Length: 143
Image 1 (cartoon, rainbow, N blue to C red):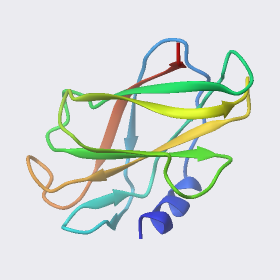
Image 2 (image 1 turned 60 degrees about the horizontal axis):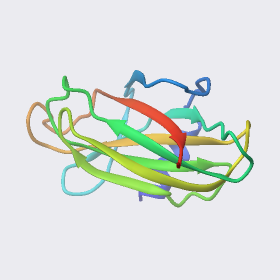
Image 3 (image 1 turned 180 degrees about the vertical axis):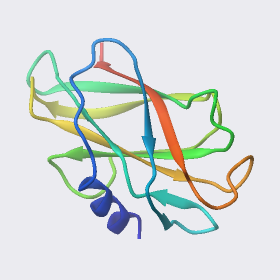
Image 4 (image 1 turned 90 degrees about the vertical axis):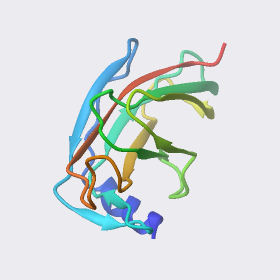
């Protein structure tokens, strides 16, 4: 079910420039799809360019849930171009929580992207509909 929802959300993504500094952003959810256990998958996502300093460089993603979130969000990260299988899933980040994940290798100087999608979990202010979500993201090379 998550793959189907991701494929749908990939159509509604928009690109952002490559990041040198952390970027804070928000996504409005026009519609949701069930994701099991009352959770809802936002049918909109965010696309970010991954610009590696060297061809094939391993890259890291630091993702922080905004302190303004009032319920837990799981973040699903996919690679474009790539398969529909996520390269990472950050489970149930609460307000202000952050994680660093390795995005793997094979990144180019331009033309490679990640997409970030969200699953809202019931609890806090979320009563079963995900209205919006966001993150603070930073993409950088593995030292």
